Image (cartoon, rainbow, N blue to C red; front, side, top):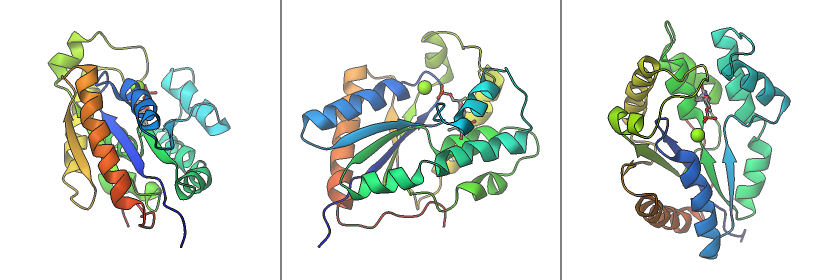
Length: 212
Ligand code: FDM
Ligand code: MG
């Protein structure tokens, strides 16, 4: 029999909800507790495609809206062989943003349907657990102002939140809503418990395919 596989765990949520901090700390904590775990983030800005995306986000280049959506998706697909290899070798992957960011952000632009936005990501490795770090716009604002990247305006972020709500209605995915207004330690404790549960649950299951 093949060995146990790792779990694919995704963090999504509003700006300033603490995704990057929690992703990093979750990897550390899982390792301390004896699991093999690694972190990833999307966009992965270091690849050739990632550099184009980064330049777009920093408003240094203008890329047509459909095109940039497909680049974000391609930036995930280019990591898939490595992701599958790691999962199959027993490593749990903790991912800061995934296809749900892709759909929530692009479909917040004029004239983009959720259906069109999901299509390029169909068939990606399906997350075993999606932790949605939930934070009210007021609480997010209290944590500091926006940065200078292209999507960092409050009007746009309100639209993005609505799209996330729609995505969370899909019960074929394992969404967990996490109260991100708790302390960093309390959030970490909650998501560590959920993650250890899922690592155990999926260890003998095949990797699923997203949105198929
Ligand atoms: N983003 C991220 C997208 O528009 N599509 C995607 O597929 C992904 C993964 O890129 F504004 C947006 C979301 C956010 C920006 O910011 C990346 P961070 O701070 O690096 O997460
Ligand atoms: Mg971040």
